[in-house]
Image 1 (cartoon, one colour):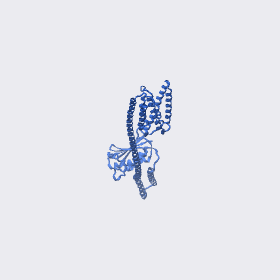
Image 2 (cartoon, rainbow, N blue to C red; image 1 turned 90 degrees about the vertical axis):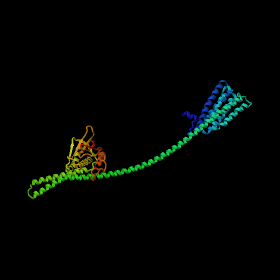
Image 3 (cartoon, rainbow, N blue to C red; image 1 turned 90 degrees about the horizontal axis):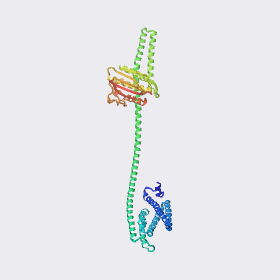
Image 4 (tube, helix red, strand yellow; image 1 turned 45 degrees about the vertical axis):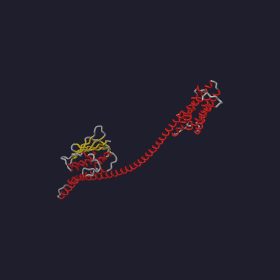
Length: 462
């Protein structure tokens, strides 16, 4: 880079100024080479005691150094400096012809003049070449100083200069054509790049608009889904409330019948005067215990419907037992037994009420399926298990109602899908899946095993 800066006189050029940049480089190279050649001749003249030529050569080198410096000051000086150099070379090369015999071959330097003109004066070089040849012939025919070259030799040199100049001009023309082609291609490339950039900007703008519209559509769809989920939650709560009322009715039916029966017995015995004070107190105590049981049942259901935002540490068997307690009266009323087996006490951290809701939904679904298929010995099996080294607990709920058809396995967890016809809401299992995955951090699936459907709940212990 430093050498390139030296050749271009420390000036900067854009890509459209390659021609003038090349001219600057050739002028600097000419300064260097001509100064070296003159200094070589100065050393020779010093050794042979040609002091007059020595002083002239020292003056030329000094003059070149001055021009070399001016070339780095202003670009406007360039044409003036090249004119001075062309004139200097014209005099110097004709000086070689005038004072040096052909045997010394110093005239060979003359053939560099067309190259100098090509880069120094470009298209105006033909005038300088004509002037150079004219001066050679004038020096030959003048009668003041004798020359070593014959007219034939002068003519031969002139012909050589013309041939070299023609070759260089053809070369320059080819270079100019190539340069014009390159500039044209660069211009086309710039136009293409600009067009491409405009198209990219346009496409980017369109994409931004599409993204904005897409974001609006996504936001709209999200709001619709949130509204849909809100409706599903409300429907799920209503369905759960209906199930709870049905369970309360099953829980209370037998105790209320017992209370009514005991009150009737007391009334009849009182009319017949066949009741003692002790019998009255015993029956009242039984009635009181039954009422306490009914009150505890209400407390259990009230706890179930309370929000349970904080996790609690509890035995998983107690959670499952609570769900079984809620659903057992309905199962027994349909002659369906619930076989609950808990092998070990496993403590978990979870949202109790949400888990109870999920278990009740699945157990009630098993009861409904059993009622629909009416197997010989209807039963719902519930097991709890934990594998060694596993940080999860598994709850298995299985019926013997024939299982779920393969084409319905993936659909039963979808909202509003039900196999119960008009008697089903289609949101129980969907909400159960949402609760297990989003609130409890677990997973739920279904499979067919042993002539029935088995639901598996995988729940993290912590």
